Image (cartoon, rainbow, N blue to C red; front, side, top):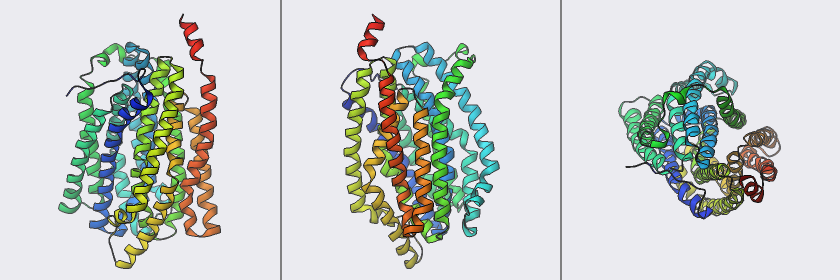
Length: 456
């Protein structure tokens, strides 16, 4: 199957965005499917305590994943810009330098993660009855950081070139593999929670190999020795783009860990209910991240091609599509969410009923406010595509402040249900910063008329 690369500098923005986002959305659904299956297998076969352990590991694991995704997405912005400009010799240099930086970063993150994991979980006051399972899961996942880095970088290369279908096919293969291995390792071989982690890493490795196979078929990015000769200015530019995005995700994750700290104080049943909804969070967000990837590629390519007017029209189209999608997803979750959440929970009848009540209340709140999250993803990605990753980092700080203040203060006023509004307030704070930032960055770009005069 030939790899399909695509320029997004011509054609109707809405059609291009939907065509690009749909395979990513489908791929993300498969990715969330194996995350959900992880949770279902652990919750059903290993019980509420194991599910709570998985939840207690969530934000720490997400922080590391967020740093990885931030770095690779930053590298991908530069790739999209060079591809849009038709500067393929520079594109190859960018890819080679991204590979070097990704390798170094993955080793550093793996070592740091192993050294700090136990201390962070203790700081978060992870309950004693789930601590051993939580640290075991985290240590296995952190050993696989180079695999996670490899997949994310390869997927970013493909997306930057307008290919969203190959990551979809890779994710389908990975999802099927993960589901089979989940059941085999956890239920068949009795490997416990570590088996779920190993299954996930093997699935990611297979998806990496699939992406690499297709990348090697793209002639215009065949790398040579020259491409790997270090240019410190280029490496610095890539870090300038990637580092703020990594920091942004890390800051957001720290806010999430503060929430986890508060949630851990409410007991194992509350943690399990909270975790069940958090696992569905990925499904709520699946289309938003896809539209975000589409927006960053679209804007990056058009900025490289110096088609400024298309950036504005494309962002508007993405916002309309995203908001409509969020309303549809919210309706589905409000109607069927309780039944879906029941798949994650096992234990005594009292435990399950208590956890399900907590989970559905949290899910309903997030579903109703989903358009706020979708606006966040589109606007943030558009700004990043324009080559500014600093202002989106400030939005991450706004998320952190709002999430933390809400998590620490609102439960004092209204009780434990106050914790459910921390995410909503974080999204709202980020949106305020991002909308202002988008208008400022857009104003700083040259007008279409000035671009034509310069080129003339």
